[in-house]
Image (cartoon, helix red, strand yellow):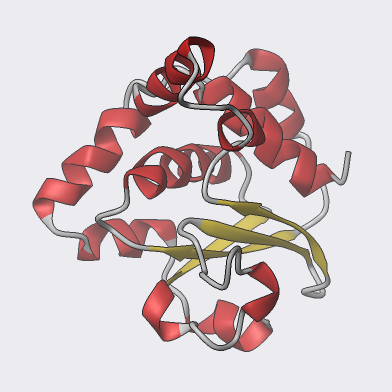
Length: 165
């Protein structure tokens, strides 16, 4: 896992290498983003180094949302190290993280300082993954997610994986 991590780009480098149209889609979520104060405080207070390998694609709407949240989180604490790779570059190395034989994007593999895996965030938050989008309530939740209205819940879910809570 360390070799894949070392081969990846930082969030900043990744954003410089994304085409302008997709960079604007990321920034649509990143710039106005608000994370709850208690979540921010917990992120800031993390003392142990965390390494996160992100498998992403610049065209992916779920990446626009969730990578933006993770980008904001890493800006709060420099002990959180993020490296990003494209899905095509790791197709065969990450079989354990595939769902229905497919590596979904984004996939964030959260590891400690020694690259021991703590957990993974795959594609979107559980609230959205488990809802029936054919129902009225499910459709509303999915629309809120796509509009960036579930960013606080996304930050909380990522933080739980990071802290092992």
